[in-house]
Length: 472
Ligand code: FAD
Image (tube, rainbow, N blue to C red; front, side, top):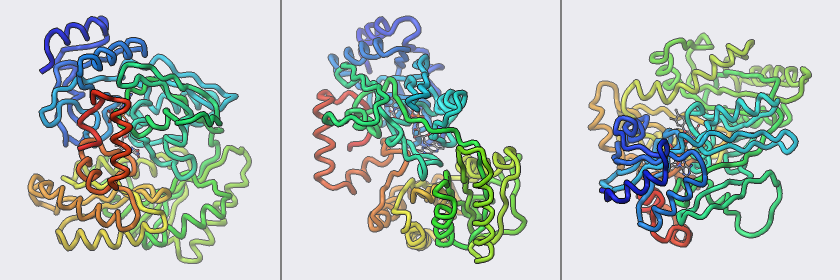
């Protein structure tokens, strides 16, 4: 438990609205969307500005008080939940850090506070005819600080890159309380270590991100959204390559969906319907877009579709004829996690392998899982364009959820070992958090882990920043 004297001092530094002890206000911040983690803390800090944040962290550093940063709490790997495994930690929420959101149209950049949502940045960019390309199903809740700290991906990585590629610089409070201000629209800056990029993907272990500057792009004003049936992931891969070639590399998204995943969405999510008549083993949802107002792209897309239909790569397909229809297609993809949650327990693997190896990985991992649990239901879907598959293993129909989930570790070991054989990553998007830290220490090389720990020790000598996250 945090001593009363520290609570009083932190409340006083934070000011009237900058902290709370109210358990009913704190409660929603202690549980994740998937209900997999439940934390505890008596104190939530929630300053609205960098200066107060720095004073709070300075105090925590001086008194060795552990702090867990949290943005929108959509992370899903227990990285932003304080007090797990009996630890005594203060929650640091960025929910009030939302005052700053400035678009610089000439620099094609946007600078925003840590607590601003991705949806708010998209809207601010769009008002100026620009595109903030980060797009993920949690965009209404996830924040600038969260996406930077997890190096979030989403559906447009294929064309615009991950958050790391979009980040030009950050402002952060380091674990000692020192403020580093690297907010800049500079595209080139070779002056030693890139501290901003070090904070990208650090999951709150190296400080609090308080603001960030990101790249913007011209708004995509002509979009062609296609929902296509294919026989196999191998065919989907071939289709993606041909789409990139045929359209001058203007593929903005290329998602893979298995029939079972679509079935769960149709069954559990109101207002959804199957865009195609028949039933097919796999589907691709692709978006091909341009910032040019002419219709040249439309002709390219149509001739690509015709050629691939004739070649038999596409079994059936629909092209959205209105914005509403495009949104309906995307709802099918974006509801996949929600639908699976409603269907039952699932053991999730957020993995990546080189794009060309996705089909072979899926074949190999599916057969290994089926040997392990022949009745388990596999829903492997995701961002084929980045080789990032959400390889979810669902409980057998009618089985006991808790008993199935008890095999999480064994199942994950099996899947992650295959990921490593394919030269892949055990976390493509959500990070390590507390969920995968044992696996990280098992699968990263000793030299990589030693370097990471040396950086952590140098910047955070008292190990106060998110101490339960990333490292065992
Ligand atoms: P939180 O969940 O609050 O925190 C995540 C981590 O970042 C924690 O370790 C926390 O300590 C740290 N952190 C948060 N804010 C700060 C800060 N200001 N400074 C330092 N550390 C901080 N992710 C993807 O990449 N791609 C997807 O397509 C995707 N789809 C999703 C779909 C759904 C339905 C859901 C629920 C999640 C999805 N996610 C996806 C995961 C999640 O949305 C992202 O990881 C997101 O970046 C988390 O942002 P957040 O603000 O909610 O962070």
